[in-house]
Image (spheres, one colour):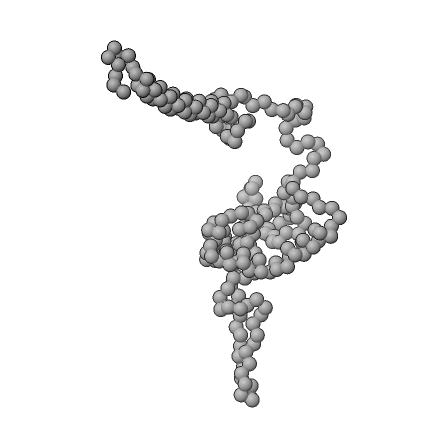
Length: 237
């Protein structure tokens, strides 16, 4: 339709303008919704702290309130109380080793003190110390002897000795204690074992020790399940 000679928009022009304005309004509404959601998200972040979110207390910054202890004064002095049985290291009656130390000369006149000098008293001082940790290498020699009949007989190897070189059961147990009991990684377990025992241990060896221990527990879980099913009461966390 040709434009109006008086400059007034025609019906088609008005409809086209209305469609354009509707599209523009729809776009602006979507933008406003996105901006509103973003504002709510930022406000939630600013209002979040260690009490209403998963943020650690250290992230609360200077705005966190001062901590208030819920403990009340007991009126008791610091340290162990009267009657408390502590865990102080105590001397043992039979030490593993006794070392006697005698003075060489008198602290008063400087005279030499011989073995026949009168002993006035003896003070006992005990030191709890670990022995020097060093792996012991035990060599098993399997002797083969020839009989007069012409047959040669080889001595059987002791139980558990299956290879020319291997780790002993106590060393494997110590390594597994570091790995499973103290939750070290395989690499750190191997490093600790090598430094403590003076024996080269790799992360792969730690994994093999774990597999060997697992095989020795075959049937254990079945026994646990059977015992649990037959128990009158079960407790679980």
